[in-house]
Amino acid sequence: MTIADEIKRLKKEKNAIILAHNYQSPEIQDLSDFTGDSLELAIVAKNAKEDIIVLCGVMFMAETAKILNPSKKVLIPAEDAGCPLADYLTAEKVRAAKEKYPKAKVVLYVNSTADSKSEADIVCTSANAVSVCESLDSDTILFGPDSNLASWVAEKLPYKKIIPLPADGHCPLHAEFKPSDAKEAKERGYTVVCHPECPKAVRDECDVVASTGQMIKEAVKSDKWAVMTEKDMVHRLKKEFPDKEFLGFETAVCRDMKLITPDMLKKTLEDEMPEIILSDEIIKSAGSAIERMIKIKK
Ligand code: 13P
Image 1 (tube, rainbow, N blue to C red):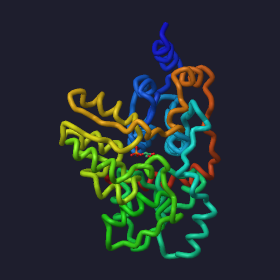
Image 2 (tube, helix red, strand yellow):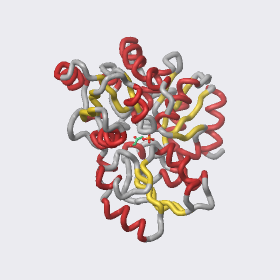
Image 3 (cartoon, protein in one colour):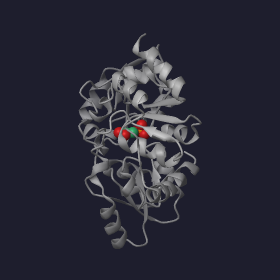
Image 4 (cartoon, rainbow, N blue to C red):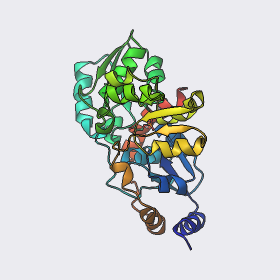
């Protein structure tokens, strides 16, 4: 039996579904039932009917799945898969900012801890950050923890005051891209897409700014793309569009996303652990901020 066959057998025996983020290794993407961006994963997890959800991604994604579908057993094959961007913010920092700006609404990027989310009015992902902020009646918004995504939202909604929380929160991978990467790819005939977590100077050089899910929707518009995000996004794009050319950036590796291996996935299904355990209080408070986001159209 191959490992793929064993995973298939275990999945059936345990009535489990495997969800993977677009940044997972090609092997894990290919072993999954569904691959998608943060928002898509949250929605699929919320509606999952299976008894077990195995989330191949990072901790905040597995926590979001548990919060949205608390009666299910949610497993993450690598419990040390964190997110350096999420670590920029603590619930304490959010509370202090709320005291300083009592009239502001708090929008937290889904790349944040469950504790921080419990202090938010609403959560967003990169796919819906602009619509979420637009939907709020407040003109002042505390937005964290990604200052680059905050500046992208501010550009799109110039009539709102978007205050980044903290001022310097960023994803180390996306912050490494340079405007010259985009310029050089354009000179080579590529249409360039970048993730909104890239700095403004990089975004300004790109043809399209998109979440990983939006990159798939946008792909029909050109035959030759340079993709400025985690390198394995290209595997997903190539699967969807085998006739198109996609240029990835080999040094853009999210180490946390790469912790999960097929062996770990199999063991997780066998042992039914590591399991996500959250208090009822966190599920309730963070859950209402996430549920509010799910109700907003993209
Ligand atoms: P997406 O929601 O676009 O998949 O982004 C997730 C992420 O963590 C980007 O670094």
